[in-house]
Image (tube, rainbow, N blue to C red; front, side, top):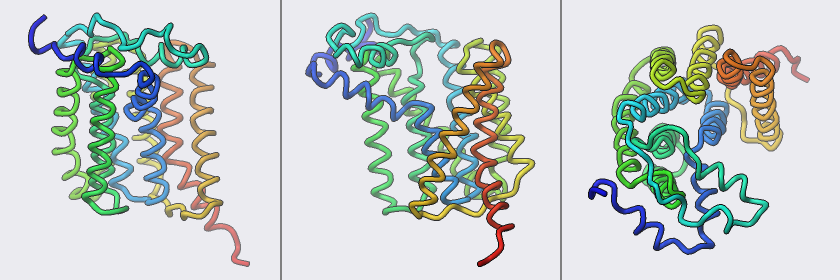
Length: 293
């Protein structure tokens, strides 16, 4: 084994058995569904065009990562997770096994790439806390995701490093575009459609089809809709946002399952991608029509 691919045993050897399952939970900070929730809520409660554009940035990054995995074709570690599935509590074994199983080659780490782009972009563009605190929190999330991927035995350290570096490179292009363009969402959604289509051709993987469908749905919705009035931070709006997002995701997944292959992966995520952009616009229009008491 070359030095490039060393380090897995060292990290896993320093991991106590009790920490294996918590790190499987930590790796969700690099999961696409957590990105969807974070980006959706950030957009709904700010109504800012540059936040909407981040959906396109993240989808482009994830599709690019899929393409690079196949082009590099580098294997994943043969060691397996730091703690075997059988050593985890039986109720948590399905979740743990899912997080320690992967289909495509390893380089770059898609979880680390997605975490770098998502949390880094939100740290750069949101206006909560201080700038320093936002970037410390984002960096901590990326490091934890990267370490968790090594502990779970699905990536070498070089995979994690490559994912983080690629994420930083994408942010270096995307963040200035988000800040300077009057409508950054249209070109960034467009790039995600093109990169997603390339990923489908190169990989033939369901994840590529999902990313492409979400990009198409988001692009179409953005062209048809206007920027919404942001939701307020009231308890009622928080409840409404939670229920609305859960309903959109459930509808998209349900339609995808009903449609089946090969249309389902595109249709389901297209509904979700379009729905998260359409929901606050529809809500704003409904509120504007309500008479003032």
